[in-house]
Length: 260
Image 1 (cartoon, rainbow, N blue to C red):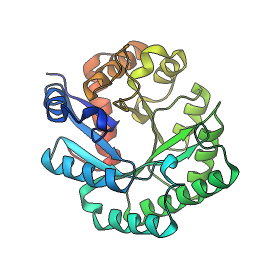
Image 2 (image 1 turned 60 degrees about the horizontal axis):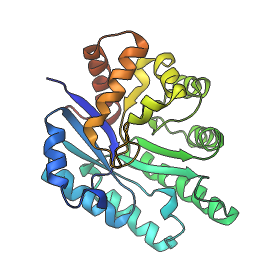
Image 3 (image 1 turned 135 degrees about the vertical axis):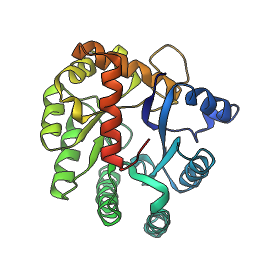
């Protein structure tokens, strides 16, 4: 039986409204666990509900996606951080949080996004939870800046979610002790394949970012497509699929303190 892990998806999103339970039941046939990310306060409540309904299979992490920062007042963000603190025993991590220079261009909004990012890093330290980072922009600017920020803030456990940077940057991240998570769209990326081959497997994780980044032409991605990442890692490293499974599971359990 194949037992694989999807580190990062969004099972609460509207793309699953019509068949969410069916999607989860299908995923259970091949996955050992899946982490759904709550990206803003309302979404966070739904993520917790879903994890409660599927205990031991669906895990929740809560954060504030950078694109949602501008729409929140300081008080709303503070209240959300309190909500996360109150539910710390129900989550495995803080995420996704970070920087987004693809959608956010206004200098004042960028400045506030960075401030909120640092706030959430402080929350993660306070709660002793790993962070899952969203760092998006043209080139590697957001990734490099995110790496500097988490280093400056003394973050020990972090995942660079949906890593799209160059292999050299991935190696630098791993040297700092942080993890790289590769999405199912690896099948279309030469750079991601090089990362899968070159960085130590002890720092690799696997995800779909479903409903986005499908490995095929399908409009909607699903968690079980994470199998494509395992296959590509095994292919690039010339190792058995089963060895890849064991290594990823070990990494997941070590990072999130969760036994699957």
